Image: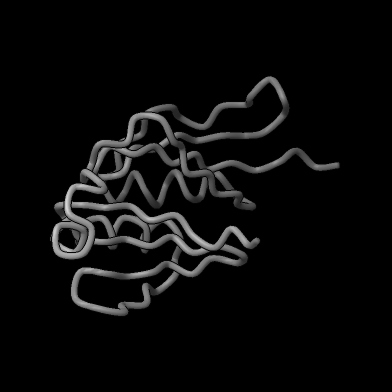
Length: 124
């Protein structure tokens, strides 16, 4: 089995695609109206409009209702991402902080309220 992707369902499709495009610097691949993928190394972040869920999976997912999962992105320079996302108006939940296990971590909230942890591992 291969873990292939995580999909976020949203009412504000373009706004959420733009947030993750700004965060990653990766151009989204738009596969259908209301559906895009941000193709990271090893995994895909899919973004779907709630309209598609209503059409094909009525009631299976509710947009902007995540309160348990945190999307985590490993980067080389947490401060550079923090500066870029602050300039883009992203909500910073926790500024760049050294965690007890050594990671340097920044916690953002995407436009739908999901958390994104941007982190780097300590040099070994």
